[in-house]
Image 1 (tube, rainbow, N blue to C red):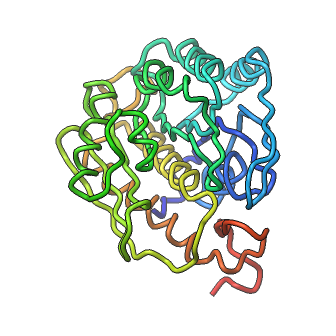
Image 2 (image 1 turned 90 degrees about the horizontal axis):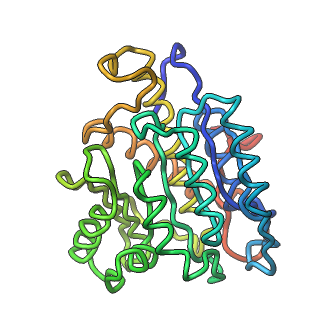
Length: 307
């Protein structure tokens, strides 16, 4: 959504892996933050040898270096929203969760946290160890404001069969919500792109309100980075929301800089804006000629193509 010029620019952090092709991961996150007007910061969880066709190798920096990145960043930069993407293994998840608790020991002071539970790349390559799923559920989801799984990821998180209909999606969203804190303002955004059909439907659920976001399926075949892009767009939108709420004094009854509650009204506005951004980036993707595999998205206005 368009922000007033008086709204401070939020600092948004992506904690994710690097995709050298630029279609997914940390680079896609930073592009999305920038396109939406936020200031993007990044913490590297993994280095991948990857292109639009697949992943050929993964290097994970030591947890001590990951912790150093997080501590150095949080010591200096005031953060308005945080996104996690590819975490890879249980040691990385434990390090990220420990850093968040270390820097935000009062949960009410943690800025909006969007957890994108990246497990499998578009190419089918595994990006999260199987034994790390339970650690993500136990250590990171309790901190999350929003979790954004696709249908296979939701099945892995809940133990339910992968949803094959919208009715099953609703049941899965309800089960996912039970994995988040019982406090209000915590949301599941369940992505429905794996269901067949000409219309894409994503669901958002906070335990009481079920929101739907619909868009036509665009005829571009396999796409690279849609999940990263949607989660990053949500992060940017929530960064603006968090910054605006605190700057306006609407959150004056809480401790300084405490995160306001993400109401259904606010979620509808911010989630819809993120959804629109994703589908604009998909719609413009034929302008990008990068690789011979899954199609990357177009995050930036292209020279000569601004009309």
